[in-house]
Image (cartoon, rainbow, N blue to C red; front, side, top):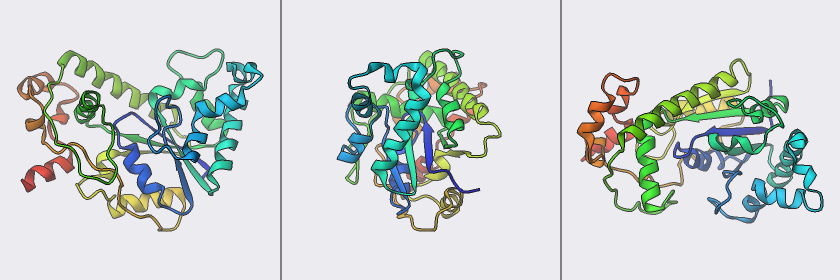
Length: 281
């Protein structure tokens, strides 16, 4: 069965989507769009990315007739938006970055609270879904905290700034971990038995500090996309965090006590890339 023209890279913020896109986009058959439901500045604000932004598209699409973007027309709107992206990309395969918390922008008039109509649109149009998960939820929380504090969300091909220590607010952290786990399970359940769904784990794609995807993982992606081996296997983003858990979390003793005996106790063992950094110190 040939791979669909469109693949939605579905993930949570701070899960490694930009790193993965920077590798996938080096392939001559694959064009990658940055997070299309962003209202603020784009990651790579070149003209094609700006034209591909969903809200830029809406401004032109709804000009003179706002009813064209009413929820009862969203399925047609989605089809027209995909056609718009295809005209911009001019490659055989197109990857579109969509975050969990922006799946509501394309919806129906009526739907259950926890079931995005967007997922139904993906299935009805035969789009593939590459679900990128970062199961080390503690690392995900730390990445959010540091990004919010520094207002620096990514660094491309230049030295990383000095890493910092942060304190983890425990009630908030435990609530977010529970929510994220339920969210990941909900997405997987929504695409259960869907032939074009694939889940990949961030730490398996980037298990060390090289910025390269391991050969077996890249082969797995290549075979899923059904493309020849033509990737430049190096992420163009610089990893901003370098300190191991015990060094970067100011209240690590409290975090350990809070996670012991919970479903998230495994997060007390650091991701492989950070263990490597620690071993090399």
